[in-house]
Image 1 (cartoon, rainbow, N blue to C red):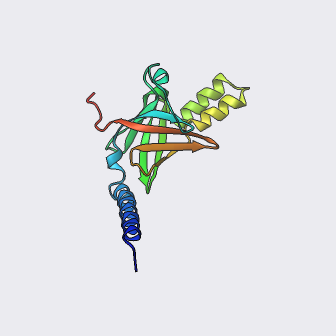
Image 2: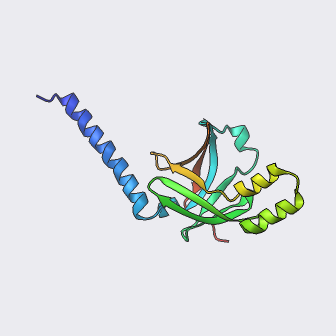
Image 3: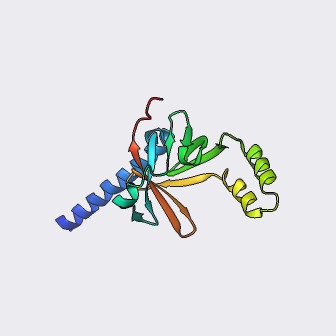
Length: 160
């Protein structure tokens, strides 16, 4: 016979599993349109940024538009974005108002003997992949042992 406590646990697990499934289906069904807005850096390596850090000025972030485009003003980057399951991919198409080929040629011209700068010029256009966390309000990128988390600060894009 199932005890009341066991029945409650099973019901709670069923509700949680249903909510997670609904969130994942919701993200896939509308291609992430519910993520449109302005996102700002909120934590590095799991450590929330403190008031002192936040008071230093506008934190880096990005704006997702409902047109499937994004901008990252702090890095003068723009491009397209897509959602696949809980993975958000930012695909840079412009950096400093230049396309990939143009930017790489300029970097090679400016730094002909600096392979580190040339590598950076390639990495600027690498896809930036973030994971939508289970809370539905946090996007996290992981590179090696490092992570950066972003939280949405505005659900609508401001009028320009």
